[in-house]
Image (cartoon, rainbow, N blue to C red; front, top):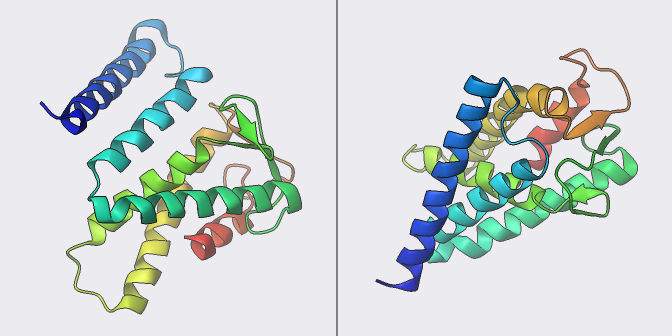
Length: 177
């Protein structure tokens, strides 16, 4: 068996194990799945799984996209531009420039998902860009309230109208995406 298949099998098994553990912790112990360190490891495993199962020609662009998303987060945290004023907690540590390193994985996972879902859509490039950005923003509308409040991955410095999240955040997501 090749190293690629072995690595993929290990990552997929770990991912599956973590998903079952998250479901079990919720059902049996009424705890939030993957508290603290587990959330960061989950994102890292998922990101590695996405990269290793992506076409070789897409890996570099997905990694670059993840790094660009991370850079946008650094700008957001440091200057309040793009998304509004917020800061990350230590839940997803380790952090670099006050942003968890696993945010690279979070961005590339979401971008890979949206790209895969849109792959067969016969859209002109401009329409694909708008549709992809809208899709990413819709995902953030679902993720942000959970990530910010029960999971405490980050905190908003200004109260917003959407579950305490400023609408500016979603405008920023659309632009960055």
